[in-house]
Image (cartoon, rainbow, N blue to C red; front, side, top):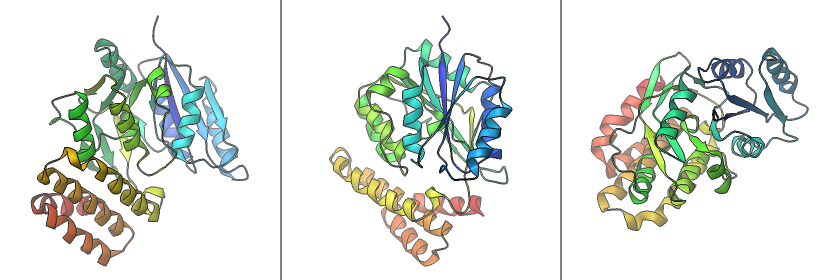
Length: 297
């Protein structure tokens, strides 16, 4: 019997983007798909009616639609969808991102052919001008045992929620997402690795994720606090790493802070973060930070 795939889409204050996201799922070449949309707008919000209208536009598709009683955030909204899902496999789509037509088919076939419990892919990121600003690929990841995946993830972040596909039973067993919205995908992947699940990497990207210049949870004070919490959390794993590897983690931390503060127009703080990042890894600081700024502008 053909496996069913549940695609979970939480949405908050995005209408046209949600329409595009849903269209990309409806146009998948794989057809045994269950679409679950979780409306996380406040009950009194004008977006409630607008989301309902978008759902009605896709009346030919059976969309499972849930309105949260209160704003829960993306992570908890995804969890609502996880426990509603009836699919054999579960994947995700943010409401401002899109799938290429073969995303579900290609990833599911890879999982079935390799008897995997979880799989991730590369990810293409574009800005609001449709310019590619980053391509996250994992071509330097060659070993998939638990220890190698753990170290790689702590250093490089095997993230991109849209790229994740799970066996439903595994995702429910590990409890879905932690109840946070900054770094939720990092912690989910960490739990997955530490569960001992059979994880695979499918090269190539069938997802386009969009990064936004200003505003939003991932660009404000919450981003700074979340990054600091994540860095402090990583420290308990430092015993696994050499001095050089720990310095790379420190470099990455201050680079993230530098870019986040730059987007907030906290330029003096951003410069301080760049100096801190450069101290731990001058080569990567010179190579990566100016490129990140250029792509943002």
